[in-house]
Image (tube, rainbow, N blue to C red; front, side):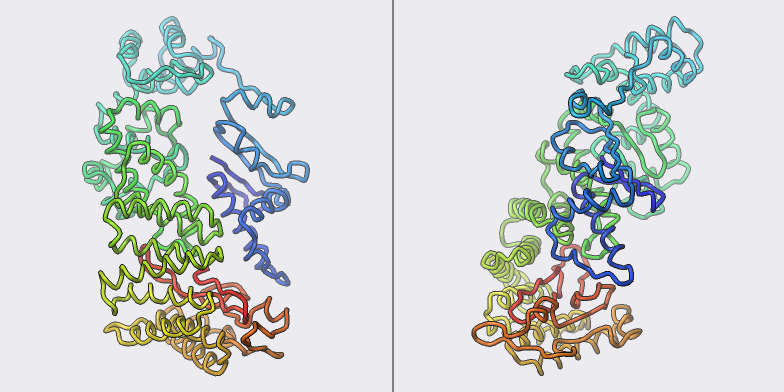
Amino acid sequence: MARAGPARAGGWIVLSRRASLLALAHRLQGLHDQQPGTRAQHEDRDPEQTLQHLLSHELPRTRALLIYDGAEDDSTIRQLLPDTGNGGQVLITSVNPVWQRSAPHHRIALEAFTAEEAVSFLRNESGVDDEAGLAKIVDRLGRLPLALEPAAASLRDEPDIEAYLQALDVPSQVAPSARPETSPSGAPAWIHSFKQAETKDALAGLLLRLCAFLAPQGIPSYFFEAERQRTDLLPRPLAEGVTQPSRERRIKDTARNSSLLTGEAKLVMHTQVQAVIREEMPQAEQTFHAAAAACLVNGWFPEDPEQESTWPQCVELLPHARVVLDHCGRLGVVDENTSTLLQSMGEYFRVQGDRTEAERLLMDALRQRENLWGRQNSLVANTLVSLSRLKVLSAELPEARSFAEDALKIRLRLDGDRDPRTLESRMQLGRVLRELGDFDGASEAAAQTLLRLRRLSETDPVKIADGLCDLGLVRWRQGRLGEALNLHREALQLLERAPGDGEPARRNRTAFRPPGARTGPVGLPGPGGSREAPEERAGGPGVCRLRGRPPGRALLVRPSGRDAPAAGGEIPGPGRPALPGT
């Protein structure tokens, strides 16, 4: 887990290694681009370049303190260190002695308690004055606070030292630790505290079990709050318990009093405590709780990662999504929640420009969905459309066409020619054909899609405007500039009348300029390629600030609902590939 605390922001930003550092890089770059007189230059930057720019320039410039808490080794962290010679500051905490070699001159060793300090700690935390008895506990558990804290919590509840020592000798399923420096004798204290909490309140034990399958830090407390109205995502007994305010408080208090879970708005459970709780469960029980955690995280992960307003929650939940999916993979859990979570994460990384990670996640989602329901399935078609959009971004157009054609075939077979999802699949195929230079095929797909969108019983002006823009782009690439202008004007008029989405255009009627509506000459593409000036090709002819898009970006019409393929695209210069869905 990484945390960044920019001095300008005056707070902490919780990160999740590479993915969250990328999100922070985009956020800082966005703030920079909003300053007067600056020009957005990061849209086409490779994700790795974005990350290196953050580590070399942005974090040192803000004099942020970057904290990697609980780092296992230095193999991955080394690639994520900012330029400390240019003002960057890094703090790494770890129990792994490998860091003694990596930073020998800047290492602060935190020793365990002395025997006297450990006894004093137990006495102060538990309220028990029997120093001889407390010394026996220290001899049994070691001298690290992580093991002594739950012992003190147990003694506060039952101050019988002999009974506590006997409880520590109960046989356990936990294997001895391979790292003596991590207090191998702490497991009995954690197990006893867990069983003690579960005896007091079975639902507190269920909450602790569920947290053991999430990331250790930053567990949102709203996961377990009835006021957010998502208790349907919890196992039924826990859902019924948290719907009662007094019961909800008692469950959380019992879990916290065990010292196994800390925090208020953000809960924390140490990784070693999580491992001990998991290992105490039979495999069937581990499988149940891993599936329950996948349901919980998938239910809270934003349905539409394309909306910028959802990015902070995506960043918050990504660590939990990764941990949950790792546990599900280890235990063989494959269901609708795991496949949908992979799909949503893949869409998020596509939006963030990390095409490698997006493809890995989307291909995993495709494999899971095909294994669950076969090839001819609606959710499989959704993933195929997402992969097609990703391949267009990567300029792998033959693969993009294959994915789009497969998705359309599935849609036609399952939903018919007039279903909105079929129309979205046809629209994606048209975009791919346009990038391949098949303007006749693209024109036919765009025209058919637009015609059927107009004939739907419940017309959607935003989707119709998107279809108009798609057809307008094809006409423009064909050199039919007048038709392209008319189609984009019609799209703008629809958006101006649409509730919410057209509001920016009503406030600023110059916010949208369709192709060709700019000063200076605009060349039209000819059979041998484009004839426009280089500066025209680089800038693109269309500017749209609708829906908060920055200058130089084209109209984006976003869908609603999980897995809905995004519509819209960048208005390209003639001869320059468009980027649908970017």
